[in-house]
Amino acid sequence: MSKPSAERYMIDLQPANLSRTIAKLAAPAILENLLVTAVFFADALLIGWLKDDVALAAVGLGGTVMFVANGLFQAMAVGAIALVARFCGERDLARAEHVAAQALLLGFLFSGLLMALVIPLADPLLVLLGAEPDVVREGARYIRIVMSTSLLSFPMMVANGIMRGAGDTFTPMWITLAMNVWNVAAAVLLVFGPGPFPEMRLVGAGWAAASARAIGGVLALAVLFSGRTALRVRPASLLRWDGALVWRILRLALPNLGESLISRAGYLAFISIVTRLGTVPLAAHQVALRVESISFMPGWGLSVSAATLAGQYLGAGDEDMADRAIRRNLLWAVVLMGSVGGFFALFGRSIVTIFGSTPEVLDLAGMAVRIAAVEQPFLGAQMVLAGGLRGAGDTHTPMWVTLFGVAFLRVAVVYLFAVALGWGLAGVWWGTAVDWAGRSMLIWWFFRRGKWKALRV
Image 1 (cartoon, rainbow, N blue to C red):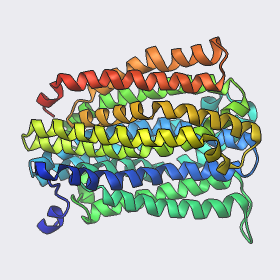
Image 2 (cartoon, rainbow, N blue to C red):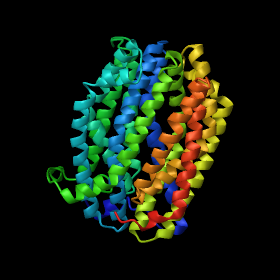
Image 3 (tube, rainbow, N blue to C red):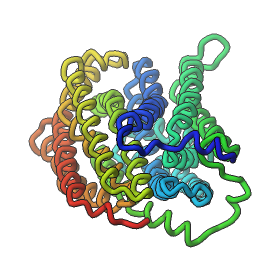
């Protein structure tokens, strides 16, 4: 990799340019996550137009299982981001590239392991969630199809994390754009079967998503291998195992993996409560989740900015600017996601009509979206603060905050509101709002203590 190519992606760490740097990092990440969400959003939208509640519930639960599986690779990406950002802040690109190679190697190893576990266990997983037999059958078929390209799609998550840690948030955005153009085009052709194409319905949506994820994986790896981003990973370096460095990555990743497992386990318990409310509430819940997922974009993008800046400022030895960068991202997240919440409150029922499902599903989904407006500022705050702490190398605090939320708020309060008090789907969403409010307040307290500034990675 030539020096000019590396310098092109170097982050401007001058205090006077902080807002401009945040915008440069966050805007592509926001667009990228919008496009990532669109992969499953498009599936739900197209399946909704089939007027088939079973298919809609099946693609929703299939997406839930994939969400759980993604947690492992998000954890590895967090470990890579923290180390890559530190080394880039120190301007030591050789060590950053070595981290990237070892993180990708871990990504390939764990992808194969996860495929071997999830593909044969798809049916039991959906039964465990309490789905009805027809939803289990269709949902398991969807999961197996999407998982078939995991050897490419899961390492893509690690590769994109590596690029973000080095300050390149544009390349992952363009990769995800290519994925989505393919996914939408393929899904329209394979779900409905216009002209010479077969009408594959849910199976078609699965193959569209699987092929899109494979394309994204190929592109991400090609970019890193070719050096068309801030770092270059030589394929031969994937064959060299560095046990000490792997342990450093895992040491940072394991608390985040623990957080992901806690969060996913809690979510599985949570979704099982929703599932037992019936197929119509489940379908409505999945529609509302797809709508709400759009609101995650500002929080996600600003959390990426907070993580990258915290790591690079600490690598440069400037603790005060690391703190200031996280606070500035926090302010932007609360304002932007609060605005999205206002939009949800005003137009919740109108928004969900684009899914074209049955009136019963749309009425419940519209109600859920309006309730979701309450949690938006809290959700944004939690996302940015957790991202900033992880970028600084403190992956333990977000894990403990998640454990608190799952154990004492999410499952317990949702069960109380939805089942014990009989509020149904409304109780599910009010309970979720209580959870995010509690988590954001707790992680703010940990952030204010400032112990994350003295951590060594």
